[in-house]
Image (tube, rainbow, N blue to C red; front, side, top):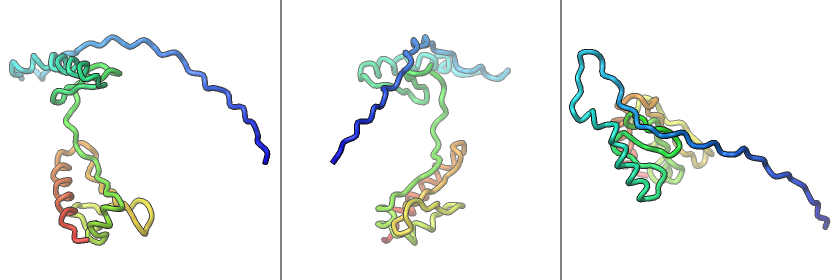
Length: 149
């Protein structure tokens, strides 16, 4: 038995750039003629307690409602999350029954993933902009829970 020594040079990395200063920006301006509530003036300060809480927890992020502060980017407004898809693993497909899982209460059918003998099923719910995806997700999970196997 012979052994062959292979030389692999170490990877070179560039030095990290200094972090950009973090600032809290005001919320976007309202269209002309529209007025906000007094609470909207406090929205830029919503991230301050979160950053203190995340520092206390030593976590990378903190979130209050839809305002969040991450260490790697400036605070920004993020819309509420909307589901895009749901994937059911092969073990759960087997438990609920393949025939039952292939007939979801959705306008489109599932996309099979993996082997034909034990497929996982991927159910597309939308593009992440339509809140009706929450209703579709609830209907899908109720349908899958009633599966007979």
